[in-house]
Image (cartoon, rainbow, N blue to C red; front, side, top):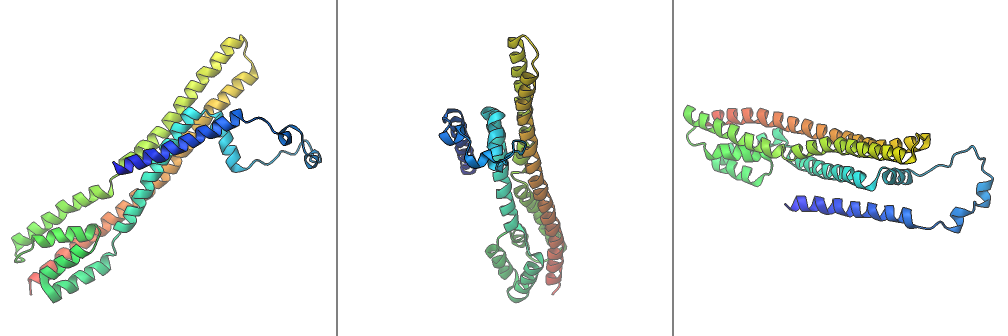
Length: 265
């Protein structure tokens, strides 16, 4: 719930700031510098276009596309990015150095036995330490039945850790799906507005049709860009989860072999 409230607060602040920008653009009177061209500007040739900063161009397109639907697309992008960044940080912390951890665990088993290995797993953080800790709690005499019970515990708790790793990916996919949908909805509503303007004018004017279509398509472009950005983050997160899963499976096999070797002593 705290994460949800934080995301909603960030989205609300950005929407509010976007509304203020829109109000300033609509209500701010033109200054003397804006009305009268400067002496230096008069020396520039008429056919040379003036370079517009990227942030001003984005702000202009945001206003042209309609603050309502563009704000919804922006909210979907912000929420998706927030979840993606949180997942990347979590997966970065959960990525184990399995070789070092297995060496430390084997040394703990040789020196202090199962209790020392359990203490090491309790001190370490990450999915591997949690999985091996659950397996060591069920390790008693090292018999075949006992090792089978340990393997079941590792598999069961490994599925739990997999669920924790994949947590939040569904919401990222939801934002990826919603972004273009919101853009298409804004486009359809903009096209309806363009046809209403044609109906009121009583004549098909090229300027009315082109302007209405341009404004309508801006929301689609914004939705597709937001979806593409989130898709890149989502694919990176999925590849990171796959890498961690492979390390967990490989380390689990080495851990069971380590227990078999320890029980044979």
